[in-house]
Amino acid sequence: MTPWDKIRERLPQSDRHADQPSFRRAEDAEATSGARVDVRPGHGSASARTARRPTHQPWLARVINQWWTRLLQAVYKGSLSEQEAQYESHSTGRDYVWNTIGTSIWGVVFPILTVVSTQLAGTEEAGMFSMAFVTGTLLMIAANYGVRNYQVSDIDETHSFSSYQINRWLTGITAFVVGLLYCTVRDYDAHMFTICAGVYVYKLVDGIADVYEGRLQQADKLYLAGISQALRSVAAVAAFSLLLFVTRDLAVASVAMAVASVASLVLLTLPLALFETEKSRSWKIDEVIDLFRHCFPLFAALFLFNLIESVPKFVMEGALPYDNQLYFNALYFPAQGILLTIGFVYKPQLLRLASIWSNPRKRRRFDLIIVAVMAVILGLTIVMTLFMKWLGIPLMSFMYGVDFSQFKALAHLMVLAGGVTAAIDFLYAIITVLRRQGAVMKLYALSFGASVVLSLVLVNLLGLAGAVASYLGTMSLLLVLLVVEYARVRREITRERNPFA
Image (cartoon, rainbow, N blue to C red):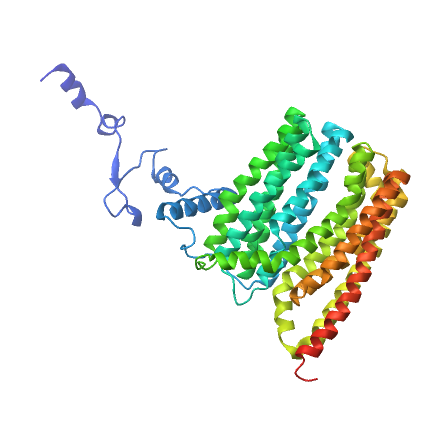
Protein backbone atom coordinates (compact mmCIF):
# COMPACT_ATOMS: atom_id res chain seq x y z
CA MET A 1 0.00 0.00 0.00
CA THR A 2 1.40 3.37 -0.97
CA PRO A 3 1.49 6.42 1.33
CA TRP A 4 -1.22 8.03 -0.82
CA ASP A 5 -3.55 5.09 -0.19
CA LYS A 6 -3.10 5.40 3.57
CA ILE A 7 -3.93 9.12 3.50
CA ARG A 8 -7.03 8.47 1.38
CA GLU A 9 -8.34 5.87 3.87
CA ARG A 10 -8.08 8.32 6.78
CA LEU A 11 -10.14 11.04 5.01
CA PRO A 12 -13.87 11.29 5.99
CA GLN A 13 -16.22 9.78 3.42
CA SER A 14 -17.99 13.11 2.73
CA ASP A 15 -14.66 14.84 2.04
CA ARG A 16 -13.44 12.02 -0.09
CA HIS A 17 -16.19 12.52 -2.68
CA ALA A 18 -16.67 16.25 -2.28
CA ASP A 19 -14.78 17.06 -5.44
CA GLN A 20 -16.56 14.37 -7.50
CA PRO A 21 -19.93 14.89 -9.17
CA SER A 22 -22.77 13.06 -7.45
CA PHE A 23 -25.64 11.69 -9.51
CA ARG A 24 -28.99 10.15 -8.71
CA ARG A 25 -31.92 8.94 -10.73
CA ALA A 26 -34.33 11.78 -11.37
CA GLU A 27 -37.77 11.07 -9.94
CA ASP A 28 -39.72 13.41 -12.19
CA ALA A 29 -41.61 12.14 -15.21
CA GLU A 30 -39.06 13.49 -17.66
CA ALA A 31 -36.22 11.46 -16.08
CA THR A 32 -37.95 8.06 -15.89
CA SER A 33 -36.11 6.98 -18.98
CA GLY A 34 -32.91 6.77 -16.92
CA ALA A 35 -31.42 10.22 -17.42
CA ARG A 36 -28.88 11.11 -14.74
CA VAL A 37 -29.30 14.46 -13.02
CA ASP A 38 -26.50 16.30 -11.24
CA VAL A 39 -27.76 17.19 -7.74
CA ARG A 40 -24.80 19.13 -6.47
CA PRO A 41 -25.62 22.64 -5.21
CA GLY A 42 -25.89 25.00 -8.19
CA HIS A 43 -25.92 22.05 -10.63
CA GLY A 44 -29.30 20.53 -9.87
CA SER A 45 -32.55 19.90 -11.68
CA ALA A 46 -33.37 23.62 -12.01
CA SER A 47 -30.51 24.01 -14.44
CA ALA A 48 -31.64 20.96 -16.33
CA ARG A 49 -35.19 22.29 -16.57
CA THR A 50 -33.86 25.60 -17.86
CA ALA A 51 -31.91 23.80 -20.55
CA ARG A 52 -35.00 21.81 -21.56
CA ARG A 53 -37.29 24.88 -21.68
CA PRO A 54 -38.18 25.76 -25.33
CA THR A 55 -37.04 29.15 -26.55
CA HIS A 56 -39.86 31.48 -27.64
CA GLN A 57 -39.23 33.50 -30.80
CA PRO A 58 -40.70 36.99 -31.23
CA TRP A 59 -44.01 36.95 -33.12
CA LEU A 60 -42.62 38.59 -36.25
CA ALA A 61 -39.65 36.23 -36.44
CA ARG A 62 -41.94 33.24 -35.98
CA VAL A 63 -44.27 34.38 -38.79
CA ILE A 64 -41.34 35.00 -41.14
CA ASN A 65 -39.81 31.59 -40.36
CA GLN A 66 -43.12 29.82 -40.90
CA TRP A 67 -43.70 31.59 -44.21
CA TRP A 68 -40.14 30.90 -45.38
CA THR A 69 -40.50 27.22 -44.46
CA ARG A 70 -43.79 26.98 -46.31
CA LEU A 71 -42.30 28.65 -49.37
CA LEU A 72 -39.22 26.42 -49.45
CA GLN A 73 -41.33 23.28 -49.03
CA ALA A 74 -43.53 24.30 -51.95
CA VAL A 75 -40.50 25.02 -54.13
CA TYR A 76 -39.00 21.66 -53.15
CA LYS A 77 -42.22 19.87 -54.12
CA GLY A 78 -42.23 21.69 -57.44
CA SER A 79 -45.61 23.44 -57.23
CA LEU A 80 -47.01 26.49 -55.43
CA SER A 81 -50.61 26.06 -56.54
CA GLU A 82 -51.02 22.53 -55.17
CA GLN A 83 -50.32 23.48 -51.54
CA GLU A 84 -53.09 23.39 -48.97
CA ALA A 85 -54.63 26.74 -48.07
CA GLN A 86 -54.14 27.81 -44.45
CA TYR A 87 -56.15 31.04 -44.13
CA GLU A 88 -59.90 31.37 -43.86
CA SER A 89 -62.24 33.06 -46.32
CA HIS A 90 -65.59 34.86 -45.90
CA SER A 91 -64.24 37.19 -43.21
CA THR A 92 -65.95 40.49 -44.01
CA GLY A 93 -64.65 42.37 -40.97
CA ARG A 94 -61.09 41.30 -41.59
CA ASP A 95 -61.49 42.15 -45.28
CA TYR A 96 -62.51 45.70 -44.44
CA VAL A 97 -59.75 46.22 -41.89
CA TRP A 98 -56.86 44.92 -43.99
CA ASN A 99 -58.13 46.32 -47.27
CA THR A 100 -58.35 49.70 -45.56
CA ILE A 101 -54.84 49.35 -44.14
CA GLY A 102 -53.34 48.15 -47.41
CA THR A 103 -55.06 50.74 -49.58
CA SER A 104 -54.27 53.51 -47.11
CA ILE A 105 -50.57 52.69 -47.00
CA TRP A 106 -50.46 52.30 -50.78
CA GLY A 107 -52.26 55.62 -51.18
CA VAL A 108 -49.84 57.55 -48.99
CA VAL A 109 -46.68 56.16 -50.63
CA PHE A 110 -46.53 58.99 -53.16
CA PRO A 111 -47.15 61.75 -50.57
CA ILE A 112 -44.59 60.27 -48.19
CA LEU A 113 -41.98 59.92 -50.92
CA THR A 114 -42.49 63.51 -52.07
CA VAL A 115 -42.09 64.75 -48.49
CA VAL A 116 -38.91 62.70 -48.08
CA SER A 117 -37.62 63.89 -51.45
CA THR A 118 -38.34 67.53 -50.64
CA GLN A 119 -36.64 67.37 -47.25
CA LEU A 120 -33.56 65.44 -48.44
CA ALA A 121 -33.13 66.57 -52.05
CA GLY A 122 -35.00 69.88 -52.47
CA THR A 123 -38.14 71.03 -54.32
CA GLU A 124 -36.66 70.84 -57.81
CA GLU A 125 -35.51 67.21 -57.41
CA ALA A 126 -38.81 66.35 -55.70
CA GLY A 127 -40.63 67.83 -58.68
CA MET A 128 -38.63 65.60 -61.04
CA PHE A 129 -39.51 62.56 -58.93
CA SER A 130 -43.18 63.62 -58.93
CA MET A 131 -43.18 63.80 -62.73
CA ALA A 132 -41.65 60.32 -62.96
CA PHE A 133 -44.30 59.01 -60.56
CA VAL A 134 -47.12 60.54 -62.64
CA THR A 135 -45.83 58.82 -65.77
CA GLY A 136 -45.28 55.58 -63.84
CA THR A 137 -48.88 55.65 -62.63
CA LEU A 138 -50.12 55.86 -66.21
CA LEU A 139 -47.94 52.86 -67.10
CA MET A 140 -49.35 50.94 -64.12
CA ILE A 141 -52.88 51.64 -65.37
CA ALA A 142 -51.85 50.40 -68.80
CA ALA A 143 -50.50 47.21 -67.18
CA ASN A 144 -53.73 46.73 -65.25
CA TYR A 145 -55.65 47.02 -68.53
CA GLY A 146 -58.86 47.69 -66.62
CA VAL A 147 -59.14 44.02 -65.67
CA ARG A 148 -59.40 44.10 -61.84
CA ASN A 149 -63.10 44.99 -61.57
CA TYR A 150 -63.90 42.55 -64.38
CA GLN A 151 -61.85 39.81 -62.72
CA VAL A 152 -63.40 40.02 -59.25
CA SER A 153 -66.93 40.15 -60.67
CA ASP A 154 -66.24 37.08 -62.85
CA ILE A 155 -68.30 34.95 -60.47
CA ASP A 156 -68.52 31.92 -62.77
CA GLU A 157 -64.80 32.10 -63.71
CA THR A 158 -65.46 32.18 -67.43
CA HIS A 159 -61.76 32.99 -67.81
CA SER A 160 -59.15 30.95 -65.95
CA PHE A 161 -56.77 32.62 -63.54
CA SER A 162 -53.89 31.37 -65.69
CA SER A 163 -55.31 33.39 -68.58
CA TYR A 164 -55.55 36.46 -66.34
CA GLN A 165 -51.89 36.00 -65.40
CA ILE A 166 -50.69 35.71 -69.00
CA ASN A 167 -52.69 38.79 -69.90
CA ARG A 168 -51.18 40.80 -67.05
CA TRP A 169 -47.57 39.84 -67.69
CA LEU A 170 -47.93 40.77 -71.36
CA THR A 171 -49.39 44.18 -70.54
CA GLY A 172 -46.78 44.80 -67.83
CA ILE A 173 -43.81 44.07 -70.08
CA THR A 174 -45.30 46.15 -72.88
CA ALA A 175 -45.91 49.08 -70.54
CA PHE A 176 -42.30 49.00 -69.32
CA VAL A 177 -40.95 49.10 -72.87
CA VAL A 178 -43.26 52.01 -73.69
CA GLY A 179 -42.02 53.84 -70.59
CA LEU A 180 -38.39 53.51 -71.64
CA LEU A 181 -39.27 54.71 -75.14
CA TYR A 182 -41.05 57.72 -73.64
CA CYS A 183 -37.93 58.66 -71.66
CA THR A 184 -35.86 58.38 -74.84
CA VAL A 185 -38.27 60.58 -76.80
CA ARG A 186 -38.25 63.14 -73.98
CA ASP A 187 -34.44 63.09 -74.16
CA TYR A 188 -34.03 62.84 -70.38
CA ASP A 189 -30.49 62.93 -69.04
CA ALA A 190 -29.02 59.89 -67.26
CA HIS A 191 -30.14 61.11 -63.82
CA MET A 192 -33.79 61.61 -64.78
CA PHE A 193 -33.77 58.43 -66.89
CA THR A 194 -32.62 56.36 -63.90
CA ILE A 195 -35.22 57.94 -61.62
CA CYS A 196 -37.92 57.14 -64.16
CA ALA A 197 -36.72 53.55 -64.67
CA GLY A 198 -36.76 52.84 -60.92
CA VAL A 199 -40.19 54.37 -60.46
CA TYR A 200 -41.56 52.53 -63.51
CA VAL A 201 -40.42 49.16 -62.18
CA TYR A 202 -42.04 49.88 -58.81
CA LYS A 203 -45.35 50.95 -60.37
CA LEU A 204 -45.40 48.06 -62.84
CA VAL A 205 -44.82 45.59 -60.01
CA ASP A 206 -47.89 47.19 -58.46
CA GLY A 207 -49.73 46.52 -61.70
CA ILE A 208 -48.64 42.88 -61.95
CA ALA A 209 -49.29 42.22 -58.25
CA ASP A 210 -52.84 43.52 -58.76
CA VAL A 211 -53.87 40.41 -60.70
CA TYR A 212 -52.72 38.14 -57.84
CA GLU A 213 -54.42 40.31 -55.23
CA GLY A 214 -57.52 40.27 -57.42
CA ARG A 215 -57.40 36.48 -57.33
CA LEU A 216 -57.38 36.59 -53.53
CA GLN A 217 -60.38 38.93 -53.59
CA GLN A 218 -62.14 36.61 -56.03
CA ALA A 219 -61.60 33.80 -53.49
CA ASP A 220 -63.12 36.05 -50.79
CA LYS A 221 -59.76 36.56 -49.06
CA LEU A 222 -59.44 40.27 -49.65
CA TYR A 223 -57.66 40.74 -46.32
CA LEU A 224 -54.67 38.78 -47.66
CA ALA A 225 -54.55 41.10 -50.65
CA GLY A 226 -54.53 44.04 -48.23
CA ILE A 227 -51.64 42.54 -46.26
CA SER A 228 -49.68 41.97 -49.47
CA GLN A 229 -50.28 45.52 -50.66
CA ALA A 230 -49.31 46.99 -47.30
CA LEU A 231 -46.04 45.06 -47.00
CA ARG A 232 -45.00 45.89 -50.56
CA SER A 233 -45.66 49.59 -49.98
CA VAL A 234 -43.80 49.66 -46.67
CA ALA A 235 -40.80 47.89 -48.21
CA ALA A 236 -40.66 50.38 -51.09
CA VAL A 237 -40.88 53.42 -48.82
CA ALA A 238 -38.26 52.04 -46.42
CA ALA A 239 -35.78 51.20 -49.18
CA PHE A 240 -36.24 54.56 -50.90
CA SER A 241 -35.98 56.62 -47.72
CA LEU A 242 -32.95 54.77 -46.36
CA LEU A 243 -30.93 55.00 -49.58
CA LEU A 244 -31.86 58.66 -50.13
CA PHE A 245 -30.86 59.50 -46.56
CA VAL A 246 -27.50 57.78 -47.02
CA THR A 247 -26.65 58.88 -50.57
CA ARG A 248 -28.78 62.02 -51.15
CA ASP A 249 -29.16 60.65 -54.69
CA LEU A 250 -32.73 60.23 -56.03
CA ALA A 251 -31.57 57.88 -58.79
CA VAL A 252 -30.02 55.43 -56.31
CA ALA A 253 -33.07 55.64 -54.05
CA SER A 254 -35.43 54.95 -56.98
CA VAL A 255 -33.48 51.84 -57.97
CA ALA A 256 -33.58 50.59 -54.35
CA MET A 257 -37.35 51.07 -54.33
CA ALA A 258 -37.62 49.00 -57.51
CA VAL A 259 -35.54 46.16 -56.05
CA ALA A 260 -37.65 46.06 -52.87
CA SER A 261 -40.90 45.90 -54.84
CA VAL A 262 -39.67 43.06 -57.07
CA ALA A 263 -38.58 41.09 -53.99
CA SER A 264 -42.01 41.53 -52.39
CA LEU A 265 -43.73 40.25 -55.54
CA VAL A 266 -41.55 37.15 -55.86
CA LEU A 267 -41.36 36.23 -52.17
CA LEU A 268 -44.85 37.19 -50.97
CA THR A 269 -47.61 38.28 -53.35
CA LEU A 270 -47.27 35.66 -56.07
CA PRO A 271 -46.84 32.60 -53.80
CA LEU A 272 -49.56 33.82 -51.42
CA ALA A 273 -52.13 33.97 -54.22
CA LEU A 274 -51.18 30.51 -55.48
CA PHE A 275 -51.12 28.99 -51.97
CA GLU A 276 -54.49 30.35 -50.87
CA THR A 277 -56.69 29.85 -53.95
CA GLU A 278 -57.77 26.84 -55.94
CA LYS A 279 -55.45 25.65 -58.68
CA SER A 280 -56.44 27.24 -61.95
CA ARG A 281 -57.10 25.33 -65.11
CA SER A 282 -54.64 25.86 -67.92
CA TRP A 283 -54.63 29.09 -69.87
CA LYS A 284 -56.11 29.28 -73.33
CA ILE A 285 -55.02 31.64 -76.04
CA ASP A 286 -58.62 32.46 -76.93
CA GLU A 287 -59.31 33.46 -73.30
CA VAL A 288 -56.27 35.75 -73.24
CA ILE A 289 -57.32 37.34 -76.52
CA ASP A 290 -60.88 37.65 -75.25
CA LEU A 291 -59.61 39.52 -72.17
CA PHE A 292 -57.75 41.96 -74.41
CA ARG A 293 -60.82 42.41 -76.56
CA HIS A 294 -63.45 42.49 -73.84
CA CYS A 295 -61.53 44.71 -71.41
CA PHE A 296 -60.25 47.16 -74.00
CA PRO A 297 -63.15 49.58 -73.37
CA LEU A 298 -62.39 49.45 -69.62
CA PHE A 299 -58.69 49.99 -70.23
CA ALA A 300 -59.23 52.80 -72.73
CA ALA A 301 -61.71 54.60 -70.50
CA LEU A 302 -59.62 54.24 -67.33
CA PHE A 303 -56.40 55.18 -69.10
CA LEU A 304 -58.06 58.19 -70.68
CA PHE A 305 -59.48 59.20 -67.31
CA ASN A 306 -56.04 59.18 -65.70
CA LEU A 307 -54.52 60.84 -68.74
CA ILE A 308 -57.12 63.58 -68.33
CA GLU A 309 -55.94 63.97 -64.73
CA SER A 310 -52.32 64.13 -65.90
CA VAL A 311 -52.65 66.51 -68.86
CA PRO A 312 -52.12 69.65 -66.70
CA LYS A 313 -48.93 68.08 -65.31
CA PHE A 314 -47.55 67.27 -68.76
CA VAL A 315 -48.32 70.80 -69.92
CA MET A 316 -46.59 72.19 -66.83
CA GLU A 317 -43.47 70.11 -67.52
CA GLY A 318 -42.96 72.00 -70.74
CA ALA A 319 -43.97 75.45 -69.45
CA LEU A 320 -43.05 75.72 -65.76
CA PRO A 321 -40.13 74.72 -63.48
CA TYR A 322 -40.23 71.25 -61.94
CA ASP A 323 -41.06 72.56 -58.45
CA ASN A 324 -44.59 73.31 -59.73
CA GLN A 325 -45.05 69.55 -60.16
CA LEU A 326 -44.41 69.19 -56.46
CA TYR A 327 -46.88 71.95 -55.54
CA PHE A 328 -49.64 70.55 -57.77
CA ASN A 329 -49.29 67.01 -56.44
CA ALA A 330 -49.00 68.15 -52.83
CA LEU A 331 -52.24 70.12 -53.22
CA TYR A 332 -53.91 67.08 -54.75
CA PHE A 333 -52.99 64.64 -51.96
CA PRO A 334 -55.77 65.76 -49.55
CA ALA A 335 -58.25 65.43 -52.41
CA GLN A 336 -56.90 61.96 -53.11
CA GLY A 337 -57.89 61.05 -49.56
CA ILE A 338 -61.53 61.39 -50.59
CA LEU A 339 -60.99 59.03 -53.52
CA LEU A 340 -59.22 56.44 -51.34
CA THR A 341 -61.86 56.60 -48.62
CA ILE A 342 -64.65 55.98 -51.11
CA GLY A 343 -62.65 53.06 -52.44
CA PHE A 344 -62.66 51.60 -48.91
CA VAL A 345 -66.45 51.81 -48.94
CA TYR A 346 -67.38 50.25 -52.26
CA LYS A 347 -64.47 48.19 -53.63
CA PRO A 348 -64.73 45.34 -51.08
CA GLN A 349 -68.39 45.08 -52.06
CA LEU A 350 -68.00 44.84 -55.84
CA LEU A 351 -68.59 41.09 -55.79
CA ARG A 352 -71.73 41.53 -53.69
CA LEU A 353 -72.92 44.41 -55.86
CA ALA A 354 -72.64 42.15 -58.90
CA SER A 355 -74.71 39.53 -57.06
CA ILE A 356 -77.35 42.09 -56.11
CA TRP A 357 -77.58 43.36 -59.67
CA SER A 358 -77.94 39.80 -61.03
CA ASN A 359 -81.23 39.47 -59.11
CA PRO A 360 -83.94 41.59 -60.79
CA ARG A 361 -85.90 41.72 -57.52
CA LYS A 362 -83.08 43.64 -55.84
CA ARG A 363 -82.63 46.43 -58.40
CA ARG A 364 -84.14 49.07 -56.10
CA ARG A 365 -81.66 48.10 -53.38
CA PHE A 366 -78.88 48.53 -55.96
CA ASP A 367 -80.09 52.08 -56.70
CA LEU A 368 -80.23 52.94 -52.99
CA ILE A 369 -76.59 51.85 -52.56
CA ILE A 370 -75.57 54.24 -55.35
CA VAL A 371 -77.43 57.15 -53.75
CA ALA A 372 -75.91 56.36 -50.35
CA VAL A 373 -72.33 56.30 -51.70
CA MET A 374 -72.85 59.59 -53.52
CA ALA A 375 -74.08 61.14 -50.26
CA VAL A 376 -70.97 59.87 -48.48
CA ILE A 377 -68.80 61.49 -51.18
CA LEU A 378 -70.53 64.83 -50.66
CA GLY A 379 -70.08 64.61 -46.89
CA LEU A 380 -66.40 63.73 -47.17
CA THR A 381 -65.79 66.64 -49.52
CA ILE A 382 -67.32 69.08 -47.06
CA VAL A 383 -65.34 67.63 -44.14
CA MET A 384 -62.08 67.78 -46.08
CA THR A 385 -62.71 71.40 -47.10
CA LEU A 386 -63.21 72.37 -43.45
CA PHE A 387 -60.10 70.44 -42.43
CA MET A 388 -57.94 72.18 -45.03
CA LYS A 389 -59.24 75.56 -43.92
CA TRP A 390 -58.48 74.83 -40.26
CA LEU A 391 -55.37 72.63 -40.11
CA GLY A 392 -54.46 71.26 -43.54
CA ILE A 393 -52.48 74.19 -44.93
CA PRO A 394 -50.25 74.67 -41.82
CA LEU A 395 -49.66 70.92 -41.66
CA MET A 396 -48.58 70.77 -45.30
CA SER A 397 -46.24 73.73 -44.78
CA PHE A 398 -44.62 71.96 -41.85
CA MET A 399 -44.24 68.62 -43.65
CA TYR A 400 -42.77 69.98 -46.87
CA GLY A 401 -40.87 72.92 -45.45
CA VAL A 402 -42.66 75.14 -47.99
CA ASP A 403 -45.14 77.95 -47.29
CA PHE A 404 -48.46 76.63 -48.68
CA SER A 405 -50.55 79.52 -47.33
CA GLN A 406 -49.98 81.22 -50.70
CA PHE A 407 -51.94 78.34 -52.29
CA LYS A 408 -54.94 78.37 -49.92
CA ALA A 409 -57.56 79.11 -52.61
CA LEU A 410 -56.07 76.49 -54.91
CA ALA A 411 -56.18 73.93 -52.10
CA HIS A 412 -59.96 74.41 -51.70
CA LEU A 413 -60.51 74.09 -55.46
CA MET A 414 -58.45 70.91 -55.48
CA VAL A 415 -60.52 69.36 -52.66
CA LEU A 416 -63.66 70.04 -54.67
CA ALA A 417 -62.02 68.39 -57.67
CA GLY A 418 -61.21 65.39 -55.44
CA GLY A 419 -64.87 64.92 -54.57
CA VAL A 420 -65.83 65.08 -58.23
CA THR A 421 -63.11 62.55 -59.09
CA ALA A 422 -64.34 60.14 -56.39
CA ALA A 423 -67.87 60.30 -57.82
CA ILE A 424 -66.52 59.57 -61.32
CA ASP A 425 -64.50 56.60 -60.05
CA PHE A 426 -67.54 55.09 -58.34
CA LEU A 427 -69.86 55.56 -61.32
CA TYR A 428 -67.28 53.98 -63.60
CA ALA A 429 -67.13 50.89 -61.34
CA ILE A 430 -70.94 50.65 -61.34
CA ILE A 431 -71.11 50.81 -65.12
CA THR A 432 -68.49 48.04 -65.22
CA VAL A 433 -70.67 45.86 -63.00
CA LEU A 434 -73.51 46.49 -65.48
CA ARG A 435 -71.14 45.31 -68.26
CA ARG A 436 -71.80 48.50 -70.25
CA GLN A 437 -68.31 49.95 -70.01
CA GLY A 438 -68.11 50.52 -73.76
CA ALA A 439 -70.79 53.19 -73.43
CA VAL A 440 -68.49 55.63 -71.60
CA MET A 441 -65.61 55.58 -74.06
CA LYS A 442 -66.86 58.53 -76.08
CA LEU A 443 -67.37 60.52 -72.87
CA TYR A 444 -63.76 60.09 -71.84
CA ALA A 445 -62.53 60.98 -75.32
CA LEU A 446 -64.61 64.17 -75.26
CA SER A 447 -63.32 65.08 -71.80
CA PHE A 448 -59.73 64.39 -72.85
CA GLY A 449 -60.06 66.85 -75.72
CA ALA A 450 -61.48 69.46 -73.35
CA SER A 451 -58.61 68.84 -70.90
CA VAL A 452 -55.93 69.40 -73.54
CA VAL A 453 -57.49 72.69 -74.69
CA LEU A 454 -58.11 74.02 -71.18
CA SER A 455 -54.65 73.05 -69.92
CA LEU A 456 -52.76 74.56 -72.85
CA VAL A 457 -54.65 77.84 -72.49
CA LEU A 458 -54.88 78.19 -68.72
CA VAL A 459 -51.44 76.88 -67.74
CA ASN A 460 -49.71 79.26 -70.13
CA LEU A 461 -51.90 82.14 -68.92
CA LEU A 462 -52.13 81.49 -65.17
CA GLY A 463 -49.37 79.00 -64.38
CA LEU A 464 -50.10 76.68 -61.44
CA ALA A 465 -53.54 78.25 -60.85
CA GLY A 466 -54.43 77.53 -64.47
CA ALA A 467 -53.47 73.87 -64.04
CA VAL A 468 -55.77 73.49 -61.03
CA ALA A 469 -58.64 75.32 -62.75
CA SER A 470 -58.36 73.23 -65.92
CA TYR A 471 -58.34 70.03 -63.84
CA LEU A 472 -61.48 70.98 -61.91
CA GLY A 473 -63.30 72.10 -65.05
CA THR A 474 -62.54 68.91 -66.96
CA MET A 475 -63.54 66.63 -64.07
CA SER A 476 -66.82 68.48 -63.59
CA LEU A 477 -67.66 68.07 -67.27
CA LEU A 478 -66.91 64.34 -67.14
CA LEU A 479 -69.07 63.80 -64.05
CA VAL A 480 -72.10 65.45 -65.68
CA LEU A 481 -71.64 63.32 -68.79
CA LEU A 482 -71.35 60.11 -66.74
CA VAL A 483 -74.49 60.81 -64.71
CA VAL A 484 -76.48 61.37 -67.89
CA GLU A 485 -75.03 58.23 -69.47
CA TYR A 486 -75.74 56.08 -66.40
CA ALA A 487 -79.38 57.18 -66.38
CA ARG A 488 -79.65 56.25 -70.08
CA VAL A 489 -78.06 52.83 -69.54
CA ARG A 490 -80.42 52.03 -66.67
CA ARG A 491 -83.48 52.88 -68.74
CA GLU A 492 -82.18 50.73 -71.57
CA ILE A 493 -81.47 47.73 -69.32
CA THR A 494 -84.87 48.02 -67.68
CA ARG A 495 -86.57 47.81 -71.05
CA GLU A 496 -84.44 44.83 -72.11
CA ARG A 497 -84.29 42.67 -68.99
CA ASN A 498 -86.98 43.54 -66.50
CA PRO A 499 -89.25 40.47 -66.36
CA PHE A 500 -91.83 42.31 -64.28
CA ALA A 501 -92.35 45.18 -66.75
